[in-house]
Amino acid sequence: MTMKKSYFIRFPHPPGGAWSRSRTLPDSSSNGSSNPEAPLFNKGVKEASAQQLPMPPSGIYHSLDLPESIKTFYRAAGVLCYARRTLWGCTGEVVPVTALLLGQQEVNGATEKWGGRRFCWADFGGKREARDVSPEATAKRELSEETSNVFDGAQLHRLCVWNRTSKYVMYFGEVTLPAAMPPPNDEIKEFRWLERAQLVHSLRTGKSLFGVDLNYRVRAALTPHRHIEILRTL
Image (cartoon, rainbow, N blue to C red; front, side, top):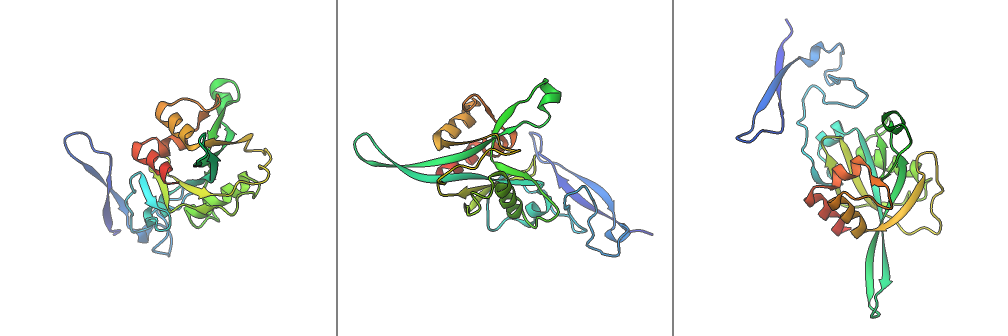
């Protein structure tokens, strides 16, 4: 007789108190594999093994010490590049400025939904692949592919943002201003530097940047007030 065991999944609780729901799953010994650590699910993403891990909440995490649960559940990752530069103020003072780099991408499924092509500003990221051993590996690979290796030397910031809904990890990578920008490619139509204040204003007001909206994953990761504040640490 196959033994059954239960694990608990905590959902966002309604006003008045938290609640949880349990599900009963077959014991790992009955998953058709001789390996007791074989995944219980196979959806193209490495899921929890016999010992179930709790889904981590959305939030800011230390990029060098991500919880194992995030490394297990994440489905995509990317890098928002930034560079530091100095400007001369009107009275001769040196003004430090943080510039952020966004890429203009085509919105997936726009033709089917709205009958034409649409574009959005996004960080440089994408879906997890089988060869990726961590969210950082996925983010660096996507950055390299989408920027033609121009920003391979990006230094990742000590903090990153995890979005539980989209299972997306956003890193922040410091780069040096290149002599020449990467050429447009199949994924990126245009590269654009903007000041940090411009991105913060767009996130808080919902307004577009240069007539183009921010994509969902950028807004979802950075819209909460405490997440916007991370941009001030760059």
